[in-house]
Image (cartoon, rainbow, N blue to C red):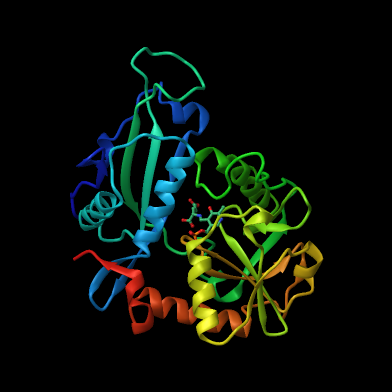
Amino acid sequence: MSERKTMMWMNGRLIEQEKALLPFMTHALHYGSSVFEGIRIYDTPKGKAVFRLREHMVRFLNSAKVMCMAHPYTIEELIEATKLAVRHASPDSDYVRPLMWYGENDENRIVINPFKFKVNVAIACAHMGAYLGKENMEKGAKLITSSWTKMANTSTSLQAKIGGNYVNSILAKIEATQLGADECLMLNTNGTVAEGPGENIFMVKNGKLFTPPLASGVLEGITKDSVVTIAQDKGYQVIEKEITRSEVYMCDEFFMTGTAAEITPVRSLDERTIGDGRRGPITKVLQEAFFEAARGNDPRYVHWLTPVA
Ligand code: PPE
């Protein structure tokens, strides 16, 4: 067994992850005032590569902007920092977690206003594996509709990946787990389908793909964008429209997309079997094409990969 320490990047330098201890008065710990990203690392014929790194860093900086976080980093510096962190990560790492958060203030004051609090930035790597279980990548996940409504676009910035937003996802995930489901589907305040706790969603009906627009209360997913690109390149029509819960019961195929979830098929929602109750044919085509792209085997999409070697 290797004794190698797990390294991460924090505030400009590489440190041992076990030494990244945070003060109790960290603002983000009390109020969720952090922003984050999740990025995949794939093994490609040219070694380890980071998938759509620049797009993730653009969203990271936009999330920080929404939270009015003042930090000294350019996108180029954060890209280099990520590459450095990945190079020093343990070999089983397949996921990167950049995090920016409001830390302490100098006066040890407890206040919601974050402006006097120091902004920290860190990038750590970890092993993620198959987010909703390896066998569900073929079998399909079992979903319930959450009794928790997805927060509204008027309650918070849903296009920013803000730590505190995820309390909504945590409550939904707890419910799904307690009820024996793999994951849940969240409806928005209008009662239409938004997304999963950490995934965008796609419905297939009569050979066409449907996915909810940003107005439905969803994160602008980078995996979603990859799937739309691949699907359109294969000649499928992709339509953004509001989707009802019943439409999902009656659709031909349903799948979830996300950096962690990649493309995970769904076999049932609220005990209603979707399609044939397993990964549908279009889902399979898109899932295989996605992995070919992510693993650097499709020249059309190699620009999505940043080699780290
Ligand atoms: N919606 C939400 C709410 C979300 O958190 C994610 C990513 C997505 C959609 C898909 O976005 P993208 O990764 O850009 O395709 N969720 C991240 C966090 C998961 C976690 O458990 O932590 C992820 O997939 O990395």
